[in-house]
Image (cartoon, rainbow, N blue to C red; front, side, top):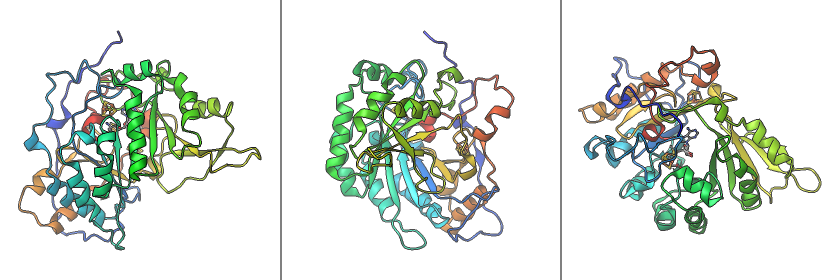
Length: 378
Ligand code: SAM
Ligand code: SF4
Ligand code: SF4
């Protein structure tokens, strides 16, 4: 069995005190950080629990029955989440992604979705609301999610081979049930659907082509994600990362691809379209995406903030500390004060971990202070 690194510090117990600046920064929808990056994308983790134990995220050895998950009272309520989200929207957020842990484990998540769906941008536009799920409960919940106002979903699926997939989720969950969830999402009108596959060299990289063949021409966008050094518990090693360039090469050798323009600024995925007989992109065959979080940093355009399950604001996936918004929300501060505190935090943001990764001194702590992805959401 591979060696595991156990976290030395519980980052949830630390946190930075968010303060309200003396001079309020009124929301204009145009807030920029210290590097001029706008605030467009808010990821909200609604639970730190999950029914899977993917070894790259919540290894069983650490996330066992004794793991101290957050107590219910520590979680932001739906009303608190919506109030915080409203301030983010006033500062320019256009897209909200619900995540976790497994977001569909949060009871009555549809109520939160309907509250978020009622929010409007400065220009009066509805938000782009989406959710990332492991798909295990999707067959049961797709219709209610759609009725509540969810527009689309991203489903994580790391392979089609049942043995490989059961091993990767480490709770013996079958592929067929996730595929059934994807079908249900499609039938409910949750689209366009994306499927995320984390590629671990030597574990599931032989599933790249079967996955590409399966989703080609289906209307579903398959995205390959480089295995990342997030958190402190997954025992990450660079030699288990398969660079996206190789993913593209392997697929293109069998199914010709042409590179496509990015769909939006700050888009993390590089897009490749399947080519038809004339060598040009055939929209009927669809496209894939590759997310090169390790081999090609995209910090320059990073416009996303992350709100943890208990209301801490993280400015980077690799942050070691978050800003405690919950104490502001549970105090007697009004919305203008809350918005001003958020603005001050974002204006000071200069995070760019992935760009600096190769120049940083080796982390001898095994990333022990780094926050877990299941806690802040992917
Ligand atoms: N439970 C949901 C799911 O799996 O879709 C949502 C939360 S999960 C943390 C969000 C995304 O992060 C998933 O697509 C997952 O595959 C990805 N992820 C988790 N750990 C990762 C790692 N070490 N490297 C790359 N992606 C990772
Ligand atoms: Fe759960 Fe998602 Fe993490 Fe897998 S990646 S353990 S499904 S939170
Ligand atoms: Fe954004 Fe941090 Fe990832 Fe860079 S490393 S893209 S700043 S989350």
